[in-house]
Amino acid sequence: MNFVLRHPGEIAWRTMEHVELVLIALVIACAIALPLGIYIARNRRLGDIVLGTLNVVYTIPSLALLALLVPVFGIGTTTALIALVAYALMILVRNVVAGIRGVPFALVDAGRGLGMTARQILWRVEIPQALPVMLGGVRLATITLIALATLASWVNAGGLGTLVLYGLQHDDPVRALAGSAIAALLAVAADLSLRHLERLVRS
Amino acid sequence: MTPDHRQSGAAVRLHDVAVRYPGADRDAVGGVDLEIPAGALVVLLGPSGCGKSTLLRTVNRLVVPYRGTIAVDGRDVTTSDPETLRRGIGYVIQAVGLFPHLTVAQNVAIVPQLLSWSPQEIAARVDELLDLVRLEPARYRSRLPRELSGGEQQRVGVARALAARPRVLLMDEPFGAVDAIVRTSLQDETVRLHRALGTTILFVTHDVDEALRLADRIVVMKDGRVEQDGTPLRVLAKPATAYVEALLDAKDAVRRLSLLCARDAMVPADGTAPGRYQVAANETLRAALSLLLEGAVRVDVIDGDRVAGAISFDDIRAALVAAER
Image (cartoon, rainbow over all chains, first blue to last red; front, side, top):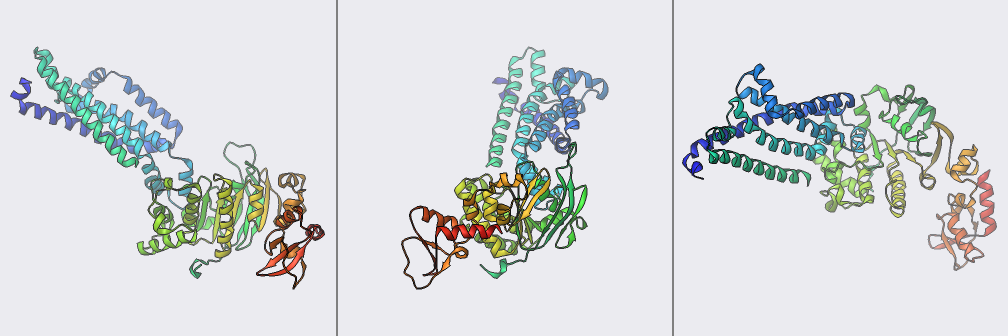
């Protein structure tokens, strides 16, 4: 507790860094996952290939993935972001595909029969119907990224992991614990608020 | 009914229409010719897999035939783009297909919205349509589909299909998912709407009683082909093939009686005092027979408040024989 009270500036700054990493990665991942997921949801063969590839990426241990990226992208935020985006993509794309494929055929058929264009069916029928499932993916991805972002400190990209890493290396367990605890709190807060959002969308 | 609802139906003409789904080794629809006059209520009848739904879906180009032509109101359906065509043709499907995330009013407003009507026009039309299908606008407008019963949902489905005053209405097993009592009342509503609007209706069903109840004309299908095409009475009295006879249980005379009107079989009489057993002039002979079986020697046919005639067993038999010719 002492550490937290004595270094409020550092804690706040590291927390900001952490949130920033997570948000940037999340926005990039969403921007890729939504169009990609929608596209491959309509093509079963391609969908299986893309999801299979993402699955492989997902099984690589996070530290190993960072180690693989460092020789190519060097040390720093870029490398951390690439790793975070890669993990988020798996979760997001899978949920977008599941959401879109889960829209009952009768609704799409009704949309076509009423004279909607493919684009109108997408925006007025498929996306609203798939939204709860897609938001579930965003929630899962956010929590995962908050946890994973603690590893960003290994490639010198900052975040709460810096406290953990420094604490472990310098025999300062309170500092390490503070970093982990704040990350955990962030995850819980994100989970709760996104769950609330999902409920709003569902009703 | 305000005159505003009235819209003349359009003729639909199918010529040599053939459909084959990718990967199938035979045609789902194999060269069908069909002339549907403006304002008719034609039922496509047959078991599942006979091609009736597929044939229906060629009319609004949800299914594209590899051969043949389809014309609505004299215009080949391939001359306009599919979306424009579909906005002009009402479409009601079995699973209702109401969008669960939209209110009743928003569902009904879809086609007018696609056609860029003004918000005032749309709001007025939505209320008008809810009235038309007998759902009180103030009560139902802002409800979600899941808050409605199956029958109410189906009414909204019909209102939605009629929103832009289509001249042709396609109904694909619309009442398959509701219980028997509600189904009967929806069928009566369909007949009422058809009479009131004059829209040409193509109705797909596998339910023989539904077909007999609704149709001006029944098209019996089997394996993608038309087995018989005629009035309900004709199809029942003179089934063209053994298949049609078996499907409609055409030998069942009682079933045929339900297509005949008391007025047409009665022996006229005037001035007689009404007896205990009565049917209305527009009721079916089946109802009259039922009374005769209960012990009546003759059943009085009431037209308005006077006795217009009477029916005995012999009159019913004679009416059946006459209908067979």
